[in-house]
Image (cartoon, rainbow, N blue to C red):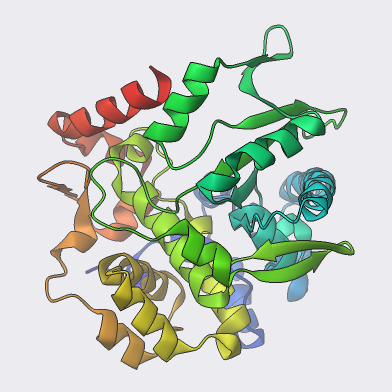
Length: 382
């Protein structure tokens, strides 16, 4: 297995700066920047892995931003400014939705990017996200839909040419709900320059449909959800352990299912950084024995170990060794498998770091394994 120190200096720089760096790492960053860096490679990787704003944050943290070429400084400052406005706008829309849910006593926890930007990342600009993700019990579908529709959201698709949202048919809504882990997306046009379209994705399952051997009851997650406050508004998040489980399930399915691999959305550093930053932020509040028990109860050892294994490879040790040992499956061959929705998964030809950074990995996938993806697409889009 290739280690982090074996990869190029550009790729090491991307990984080092994808999470908030410790005070002790400033000298390491300074030394890296004083050597030769192929910036076309480094900046491309930071953009495609959504970590450029974290890079800027870390440069500023250690007083090293001035070392960058001026054009790169301008690029980073512009992106920082755009996402300050964009994320702030998105979160104002989230607060509006939470206020309406609260009026109806609906417990709909927020997930992923919009949660992490609010409570985990050091600045709102440092976690890029493109939609508002939430989790609901299926029995709440009617009040959730009615609430979102009452404030202008439409379950539909965006017609870019005519700048309108076209509502989908009832049949399409039902098929989407049955075939996927979510109900059909909600969209709303806005006046914001940087978020012309507000998208709300409401999940009813944290796993995937089809050939999925795992089961986590959404009602269990929602029963354990804890209240949080965003801009003086009550919302909910999953408890500390369930958030780790949700982030891990999300990353695992997108890393290993053909639907995401084929569109090059499978391996993105920010997803691993999310989990690492979350664990570091709430380390003292996580009951690790309870985590092991819950993971084993749901039989999710392979999924959780996959995530813990790779965040350690990328960012260093963070999960207690005893937890790693308790969750480690006997056979680790699955760590390099993909197309897991098929009866027989395929195995990557490349090591993890090569496939993480090399977009040409798509050329090596086993095309015969696409049947599971085709079935998924047929079910989702008819």
